[in-house]
Structures are given as C-alpha cells and as structure tokens.
Image (cartoon, rainbow, N blue to C red; front, side, top):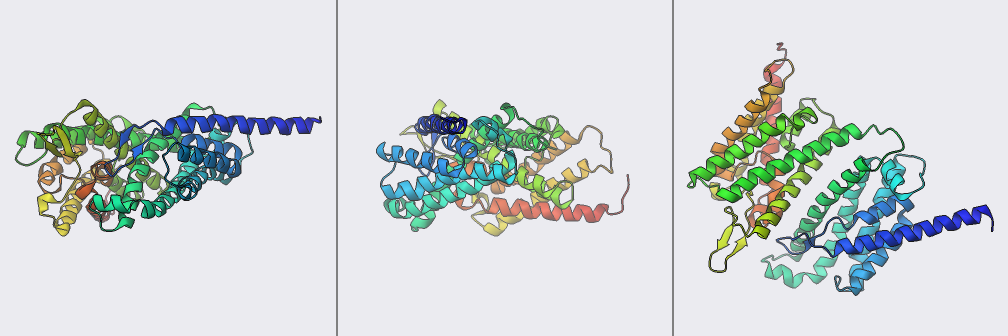
Length: 444
C-alpha cells in the first residue's frame, strides 16, 4: 500500500471516528432538557455544537452525513413525527450549521490545519458566529414550514388564529434560547483551545464577551429583583428596590467591564455611540448581538431558578389554589400602565431613553473631564428614569433588557415587544443628534 493510500485511509478513519464522537455527543446533549419554553419545546445545552465543529473540520458534505444520521436517530427515538420533518426541519437545518462553520473557515482563506479542534480554532469567531446565525435562520424557516403542517391544533389551543404566526413564534422562541447558549459555548471554546497563529479578533471577542456578561447581570439582578419583591406603583418598596437594582448594576459594571467595552450593555446606547462616531459598525452589530444573547441567558436562568426553587414570580400570575404560576412575568415590559396605548408607550420610552443617553454622552465625552464618578452618575440616571417609567411601561430604555424576559414570558410581553425596541432606539438616535448639535465647536 502506498504512502498516499495510507494517508488517505487515515484521513477517512479520522473523519468517520470523529463523526461518531460528534454524533454521540450531539445525541446525548439533545436528550438533556435545561428548561421548557412557554410556547412549548425544550432548550438543550447546545446540542448543535458538535455538528458545527464537525462542519468546520471536514466540510458540509460530511456535515450533511452526520446531520442526516442525527435526524434519523431523532425520528427513531420519537422526537420527530414523520420523515418529512427529518428532511425539511432537521437535516437541512443541521447541514446549514455544519456548512456555516466550514464557510466561516473558507471566508478567512486560511490553510487547512490537521485536526478538528485546531481547524475550529483557526476560524475567525466573528464569522463563525455570523454564519451560525444565518444557519439558524435556515433551520428556523424549515421548522416554520413543518410547523404549519403539524401545529394546527396546537396553535388553536394556544389562542392563535394564524398557524403561521404560531409556528414562527413557537420555533423562534426556543431556537433563540438555544442560540444564546451556543454562542457562549463557542466563545469559551474559542478562548480555551490554543490557536496556531496570532488572532487580531481577540480584542473584539473580549469586548463582546464583556457586553454579554454586563447585559446578563443587568437582566439577572434587575429583573430578578422585580420578580422577587414585586414591581408596581402600589407596592412602593418593590418599586424603589427595582429601580435601584438596575441602577446599581450599571454602577458595578461600569467600573468592571467598562474598562474593556465601555459598558454599553444596551443596544440604544450602542446606537448613540455609533451615531456619535465613537464605535465602528462592526463593533455596533457585535455589541447588539451579544447584549441580546446576554439578556436572553439572564432571563432563562431566572426562570429556571425561580421554577426550580418554587419561588413566586411577583411580576407574573400565581394560582394560590393550584400553588403554581399560571403565567410568568420575568420583569418583562408591557403597556398595561398606559392602558395598552402603543403611542404612549413609544413616547415614554423614547423620552426616558433620550434623557438617559444624554447623560451618558455628556459623562463619557472626552472633551470634558468628569473624574472617576462617571459610573455613579450614569447609574443614578438609570435609577431616576426607572422611578418615573416603571408605572408606565416597567421602564425598558434598553431593547436587549426587554427581549430576554419577553421571550420566556410570552403572551402580551412578546406581542408588544416591538414597542420596547423601537421606542428606545428612537430616543437614543435623537439624543445623539441633539448632543452633537449642543456641543459642536465646544472645547474643554
């Protein structure tokens, strides 16, 4: 046997054996349920990760083979309903994930490195994540298509007249949660596995990771406080405690991750910084993605802990007779305080965000020195806008902070979510333009 044949056989054996390990790991992870989503479905600890790594290592053809076998195992195990779902929902979606990693590697035009983990680590993490998000959209579209056929009865039971809308929300909710977990694992692997060459993207990864951590802490402690003590204008103690919880998180994070990323932990703040030319568009989109993922992860952990510990979510609805939560609030924002008036909700969020962002822009303006008290000033500004805003909308002034809890609360929180994305972003844009006009030509 020639050396070339021996080498080829070794590569074939490597692909098959590595595929077997990835297949087994993916199947084991897919059976572990971290928590149930309010719309149905369960989130697993990144069961798609082995397929992504395999796709990076050996390409989309081998990734397709592993994805197809994985889908067949799920069909045999009773997770899937028909062979139609195997092709449309899982195989296409998982193959797209395998292709995502491979495409990210090719996008960098780097030489192939022997070994799955080395090749995985050689790919730029930003492009791997970007392709993975696109692949998840492909998976979501496949899931929606199959859901239209199989979820008709479930949609009616959930109170949805349109099965398309139900399928979009149902599949999107737990895929977003799964994507948040996957992003965390990808970043950890990326940082832990040694790289064979210098990586210029490490600084970006550090910033994005800092934003993830900051937004996670904001939702976990801020919304968690609201869940624990209640957050309505009648319950004065909980009202003030919640306002201070959000503000104090900003103070703490400002002197921690502020050294790394500037501690935006808010897409509205990042938009204002982009308009003010204090960050690049690449940083802006990366910040938004990881802020949102951090918020989703924080909300997921809150629901898991409250549910596991049997604690009552004071922002939800508790059935005392049945001794269980009939609906979770998770500190989500809503329009009940403005009698469901969308215009009022957008206006209050835009105005409060503009006030908050104006303070941030003034404190962080390098032309004027404010000493080391910037974090305290920004934190108390957030407390201030919460004191008024809680009675109206629960105070968002932060799209990521609203997205995380809404996904797991579902219902009205999810249907009105767009208000708490549009309002703060409008307010931030206006604040940036106003501040630039006010300080034009000014010197310290």
